Length: 130
Image 1 (tube, one colour):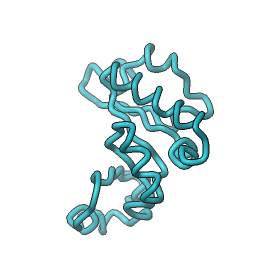
Image 2 (image 1 turned 45 degrees about the horizontal axis):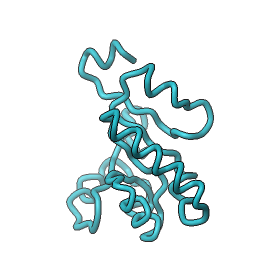
Image 3 (image 1 turned 90 degrees about the vertical axis):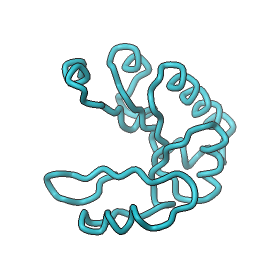
């Protein structure tokens, strides 16, 4: 990961907060972006504890200079809770369900209220994966 970083490649840590992702990774590797697992985005309105965890992750990444993305945002309420914590990058069905690569240009040129969607295209399948 460090070798990629040294070449100028931006590397993201996906699904942060679940599975094998660890806080130690934030100090051990030069990540450009952290993507909070959708479980947290979707549960913020149900649990003060989850909201405080997301708030802490937002503060840590801000202080480390790492971009933060909230995954799995599907409703306006979820978007508002994310924006309240100064997380300004989101992805999820709130903006669009997955689309084929040939439709991405139209999606990105359509008027959108709020933050712009993040799009990642798989080079193997040509389909939108994020």
